[in-house]
Image (cartoon, protein in one colour):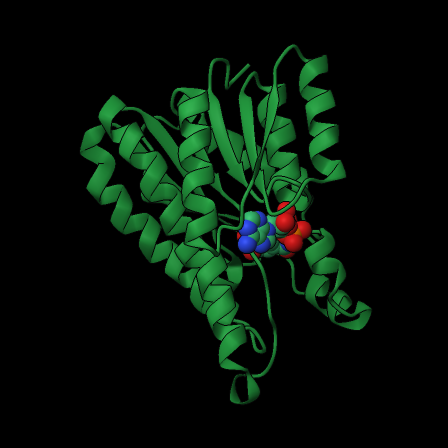
Length: 247
Ligand code: NAD
């Protein structure tokens, strides 16, 4: 069990990649607090899975894009847990469209949820980690943040921002026992990518050296590694989970 005794906060844990990260964390012995905007079937499944494994899953309801909602919720979870030793900033949204006709609202909402949300949650959780001189923070970026993607200027900017944020924070906290890394997934099969038209999906998969979409498990396993002591000397890194796409 790689995460025995770990208390973890995972944002966007109700479905997709976040749900699989929560499931794998529980499997590896962690107790998980999963943040989501509303109660969900996913959370019920995770709670049942945790109970089966002799652990617990706690649902935290908040909107990471709204400071008035997320601050008190994360502070309460922090108090309830007694402190987190792992934080996974996974919540994210897309509002795709070509740049020249993108509404300011779509630009701002993506930056607010994906980047500012990560900043707010991390500020609260990392202060406590720094006090305890222990913790691992994993932020979900994207291959789009490294290489760009037409129709996603807002999303690409938010995910590139996550990389700069990760490296800068890692340098602030490295001497204080807290590691900060990012994962840059490529094309992963989830509800988010289900929205991509079939033809575009086919072209995208053709461009992946491993000729397949990634699974949520592929991403979750990399997050488990970064949250565990197996990566004790790794900080300020961006790990691509992309079948060779970003090389
Ligand atoms: P998803 O849409 O299936 O899940 C996103 C999760 O975030 C959901 O649980 C959702 O409820 C939550 N969320 C959204 N807005 C929120 C808010 N304001 N407050 C709290 N929670 C909120 O997406 P996914 O495919 O599982 O992606 C997870 C992360 O991985 C995202 O950050 C995404 O950008 C990143 N990513 C995904 C892919 C991919 O191919 N699926 C590729 C690269 C990066």
